[in-house]
Image (tube, rainbow, N blue to C red; front, side, top):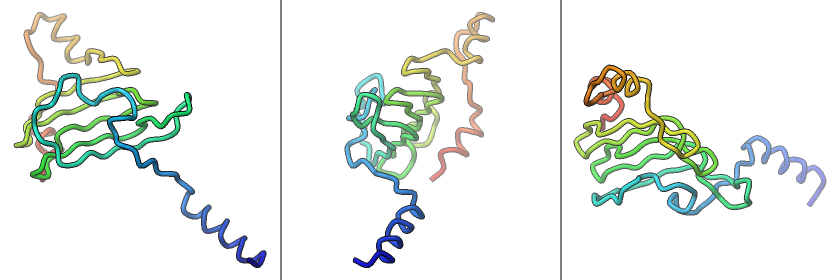
Length: 138
């Protein structure tokens, strides 16, 4: 290989960002996406993984699951293998079932839930039906 060809290969690699993609199942990269066993059918899962601090591949970034009809079933984010931020779950018709918040893999109450508990409310729907339906349209 001529020196000029080698330089072109290095430059081409830099242009693509040299991102390594881990080809392992999302389920092996950290906390399970669901607390309870799921009895429905999931068509597709999508996650991002990277090499974690302990040297193993962990989920890190966006996580999504889809029903066979193409609607989102579950959406959230992982940080170093632990659930983080808002997680949404929908039924097969696109109805929002739950919105939960996680920090370092542990569920924390949302501000709306804390306010409702303080006010003595029995249940809270932290997401309006309009925003949930806009988020999960086929």
